[in-house]
Length: 108
Image 1: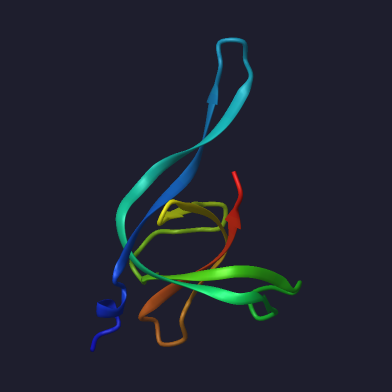
Image 2: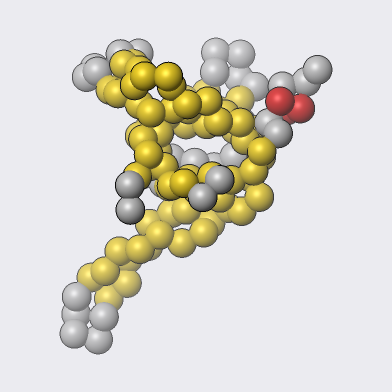
C-alpha cells in the first residue's frame, strides 16, 4: 500500500489575512486557502512533548500527515471534522514522502 493511500480523510487549510477598515483598524481573519486536502490525523492520547523540532520543548495535541507537495506552515489553521487546529510546526519526514503538521486544538 502506498503512503498516499493512507491519507484517507480531507481537511481545509486556512491562512491568516489582514484587512484594514475604513477607520484604519487592522483586523485579522482566516480564509480557506486549500480545500479538500487529503490527510490523516493522529491525535495524541495525552499531549506529547517534542524536543526535536526546536530548542524549546513543545506540546502538541496531534499531528496531521499531508502530501509532501502540500503547502502548510506554522500559524495556519486546519479545519478537520468540524474542529479547528492551529499549526505549531511543520516537518518533512526523513524519507521525504510526507509532511507532518504538529497542531493544537483551538477552542472557539
